[in-house]
Image (tube, rainbow, N blue to C red; front, side, top):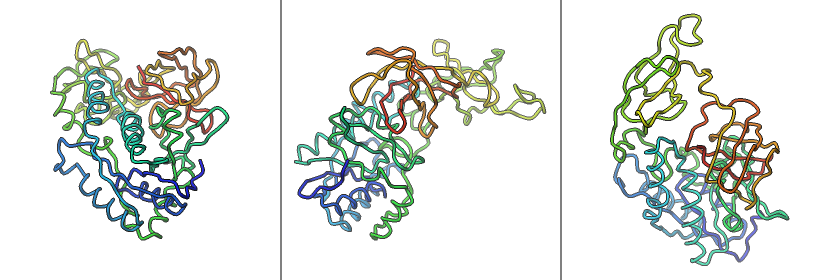
Length: 369
């Protein structure tokens, strides 16, 4: 989508990081009337050492002064709790591992934020996401970013035609090193600021301890999937995810599966039994129980509004930064789809998103069952 915008207004979501700062800078240079908007979406522990919103707001104000734009601060904490965090907790209670960034984008950054910006009189919104959008004969398409190592289309796969038609992605054709270079040349002090990680708008923090505040511990046994022998104790199934290696507190066992040399092999989470509160583990990353030939997904969302064709070849991601895995759709309807991989995939995790691609075009996806 062309970035020229003389006489038009764009509201840019500013986070205090280098990406959104450069997005605003580029649009200002392209003639847009740029207004920055800083979203505050988390209030439970605003003075906590892990909550960086105050520091981020200071960075936003500094960047806006340097670029020469106005900034508005808006509070979406209620919307975030109702439409993102409550679902996040509900999924963990059900033994799944949700992806809050996907919901955060569809419900907050491209819904609450978009609606607010349009009420302000904006023609478009913009973010610092590494992704692209273009208009075709069939409508708007979401594209992978030029920088494959930073591409964030996976997190944006639930966007619809209205949202894409109103959104600009100024970083679509830029590599991260170029973004930092542009920030440095413009004298923006965030040029070398560390990228934010952790839960969307909540930040990077000891995750298990954070989750325990909302989901109390419920201890149970850890067992070996191969022979059902007990190995230790877990604090709660909600605190573990498929493929997890760290934090099991059971060490390695000499002579485990695949260990012909008698060396210690790591244990990995392979299964949860919610009914009996059991956590099953296997030894070795290459254990067959960690691989899946296919998956079923529900809560489907397709960017074009139309379902992809069954029996065509697509690329699928079942986690962020994963290489596209060749696959086919065996069955698809309005409620769910069944996907079969050309080669088994590691740690396909219920609650995470599966996202389908045709080359650079992101088609949409669903939640893994």
